Structures are given as C-alpha cells and as structure tokens.
Length: 512
Image (cartoon, rainbow, N blue to C red; front, side):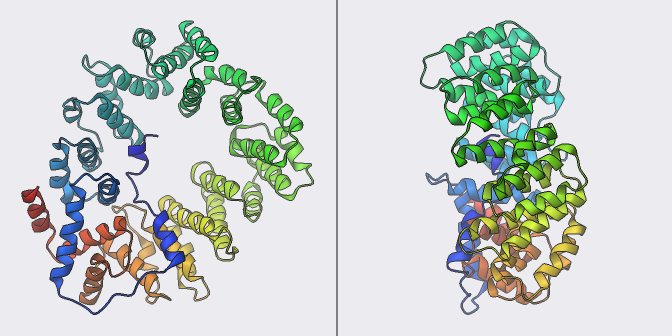
C-alpha cells in the first residue's frame, strides 16, 4: 500500500496513546470567550494549507479528510490547484473521497505534470477503492501517462483477471530501471509469457546491491495481487543458499501463500534445522500468519512442542487451517500468551478472516488483556485494545455498543483502557449510525475520558449542550492536550456547532 493511502483514513494515534500513559491530559483552565477558540481553529486550519518539512500539514489534512464532510469541499478544491505536490495530492484525494461514487477525477489526474505524483495518486486511489474498472481502462490507454503509472494500474487489473496486454509489459522490459523491469517480468510470468521468467533469472543473477530490495518488493506485490505463477520463483529464492534471512522468510511466506507444492516441505526442513529459539519462533509465525490457507498437518511439529507458546501457536494454527469450530477459542487462548506479534496477527485475523462471532470473541479478548497486562508492554496491549475497539465498531456498530458499553460503564475498568477504547472509536469515520455513543455512560471516571467522549459525540454530529460546546472550545484551544490530528477535528466540530464553519473556511481561502 502507498504511504499516501496508508494514513488517509484515520489520524495517527500512537502519540496520543503515549501521551495518555505518560502524562495524562491537562485540565482546562477557566472558561474564556469564544474568540480564542475561533482563533485557534483558524490557526489549525491555516496549518493545513502550508506545507511543512515535518509533515504536520499531511497529518492535519488526513484528519480532515477522515471526516468525509462535504462542507470541506471548497478547501480540497483549492488544494487540488496547489503547485505544492503534497497539498495537491490531498486536494485530489479529498475530492475523490467526497465524490458521490467515491471516484478520483481523471481530468484532475491528467492535469498533474509530475509523473511521480501522478503514480502516487493512482496507487492511493486504488488502495482506497477510488478507481473503478472503467477508469482503470482509460488510464491504461492514456498516450501521455507515465509507463510506471500504467504498470501500477495493470498489476491491479491483472490480479483481478482483467489485463492481458503483454505488449505494454514487453515495452517496460526495455526500461533502465531494474524495479520497473522486474515488475513487468512478474506480470509476464503470470501471463505465461517466456520473457517473464527470463528477466527474473537475470535479476536473480544480478550483482546490483539493490537486487534483494527489488526482489522483496516483487515478492510482496505477487502475494498481494495473488499472482500464483510467482510461487515457483518465490520457492527458489526461499531455498537459495546464503539468502538474507528476511528475504528468505518473505519468499517462503509467498511460496506457501501462493500454493507452491513443495513449500510446506521446505518450511518443515527449515523448522527442523533451526537451532536458535528465535529462528523457530519466526518460522512458527510465518505458518500462523498463513494458517487460513495451509494444510493443518503443517502445524504438527508445533503442537508437539514442549514450549508453551510454540504449542499454543500450533493448536491455534491447526484449528484455523482446518476451519474448526473451536478455532476462536484456541486463538483466544493464544492471545493470553501476551506475545505482541502473535496478538497483532490475532487482530488481523479477526478483522479479515474470522467469522463475525469468532471475531467478536478474539477482539474482546484483546481488549480484556489490556485491562490486566503488566506495565512492561502495556503500551502495545493498549494499542491492540484501541484497534480492536475500532474493528468491533467497524464490523457491527450495534454489537460494538452492546459489548463496549458495559466495559466503559464499569468503574473497575482501568482508566487507560477506557481512553484507548474511546480513541479506537474515534477512528471510525462519520457517516453511519453510532449506537455506541448512546451507550456511553453519562459520567466517566476521569477528565481525559470525558474529553475523548465529548469529541466522539461532536465528531459524529450529536447534539451538544451549551456547556459541552464551551468545553469543546477549550479542547480546540489546547486545554485538553489532544494530539493535533484530534484537535483539528475538534476545531471543525466546534466551528460547525457554533455556526462558524462556512465563514471560517471562506476567510482561510481568501487569505491563501
């Protein structure tokens, strides 16, 4: 996934969680007039239209785009005309996300002169599902579009069985860029064109110091787009003597995922040959991460292990691979081992592969774990609880309300866990009903939690009392020590609740 697309849906929250754990949120001072809040809101909006070396404008604009508010369309329209690449990118992407059919504007895309920016926008649009098949076909036929950008579109279409233009790929083989030639080669391999494996053989034999960086990128691409004919190539790399360990594990993972017949045997050989516990756990994690697509028998050496963590990985992996009805219970038991990489996998599995009821059990176990985790590693457990809360609400808002409401209302729930759950709920974009807001307790145990709950209500357009609007203004002014990505969302919500949003935006556009 492109860097631009990775963080356009949700504002960053890691810094906020660190702040909650280390110093807490400062209590606001005495109430002031509305003018300071308006000034702070104007300042924050102004930071969005000024490109900064530290990337602050990127973070703020992602947070505003996350709101998906049509009232912000004038801002994104202005940014789309900016000569500054990152501002232009946010403008075009912001407009695409507000489009009734969530589609990027090809006319605006055609007007982008910088091939790198154009390719970045295309990649981001595909990652965010803002580029339909008809638009993709148009891009592939654009005479002036950079060849690299066309390859990005082609690889997506090929993965979906909608691309067969070997001539375009053969043209890319003439490029002086090794990565571009490699990408074309992997695609030709998938099409059954002999030019593909021939070019990959050249890459394997290359002495270029960046060779393995390129091979890793191609392996990731092949797995992401399910280019199954790359499995044999990945298998060969996984068995190469002297291959860098990270590349070897990646190649083994790709060979297993794409169904290479000998990959399971190779995994077993490498597991049996591993002498260091760290090497064995890395191979165990490879198998666990791919468990939904593997033969349950692969996990036998893990289930027979004397090591409790290894045994639990084997039991959970085997149950998932077999589609066993008890899989969720085994995963929950594995979560209790408190291994951060294992629990990160459990979170992804619950979000992407588990059935709804199984996902709920696993996500709740991750949240519960954060309530009793030791201080060492607590930050990671809170991060997982935050993401688990977000995924619960994303998958079924009504279920999230039923499951999270009692946890938030329980006076015995640790303060930091309450805050982590609320931060997680703040990641869900507005636009769908949020029954979890109605399930929030009328009183929360600390000021920090009350601030986050207030922002959650304001962000989703809930009615606020005059006192709540005033408190929201204090947050805008920095009285709650919110991270700026949340503070600018508070600022926009405050402007809307006080009827000043349109005028504030007009002043911003007039002055820039």
